[in-house]
Structures are given as structure tokens and as C-alpha cells.
Image 1 (cartoon, helix red, strand yellow):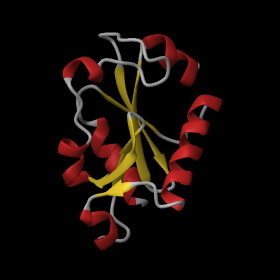
Image 2 (cartoon, rainbow, N blue to C red; image 1 turned 90 degrees about the vertical axis):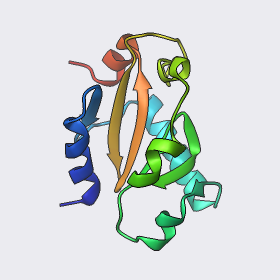
Image 3 (cartoon, helix red, strand yellow; image 1 turned 180 degrees about the horizontal axis):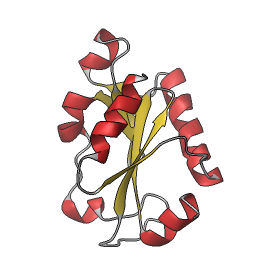
Image 4 (cartoon, helix red, strand yellow; image 1 turned 120 degrees about the vertical axis):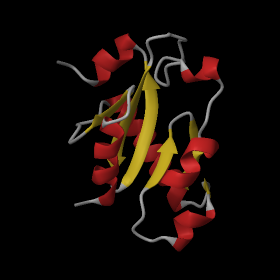
Length: 126
């Protein structure tokens, strides 16, 4: 099993996190994922030391901080947001107390972001 998929399963057990498996991303999300790949491939991403020393490890990046990729141990501190920013949708930038944390596996890297209810419905049509 892909280690990132295993970590997504672990995230599913955490309250308030919605892991998305086998998701066909919207145009908006696809563009963000292309940007992340471009940043990584051109050396424009900061990492914790574990990213380079633990090949095959599970790494996390966030759409609110796309220039950073870290291991799961460093993610809590490196990707932390102030409370108000944590309730801001990463798609439409609107503050909403019902913003939900979402995580997808992108080629072995967990990409996390927040979506307000309207944008969640756009990304995850029923």
C-alpha cells in the first residue's frame, strides 16, 4: 500500500478531516496540483530535513502554504494557521466557520486544504 494512502486512512480517524480517495480533481484543484509539481521540480519548495533523508516517507504540503513540504512529524508546527485563517476557504478565500479540512494523495504526497461548504460541493459533486 502507498504510505500516503495509509496516512489518509489515519487522517480519516481524526475529527474534522475529510480524506478524499481516488478523486478526479476539478480544474481549480488540478491547477493547484500542477503548481505544486512545478515548485518541487524547480527547487522552489522549502522542506524539513526529513524530506531528503527519508525516501519513501509520507510528506505533506498545504495549498495555503504551497512553498513548503514537510514530513508528518513536522507538519503540525510547520503548516499551522492562526484560528481565523484556518476557517478561510482555500478556493474562494471567504472566511466560513464551516470550512472543512480536506486531504488528497497526489503521487504519494498528501495535499491538504480547506473548503467552505459551497466550494466543497463544487469540488465533490454528489
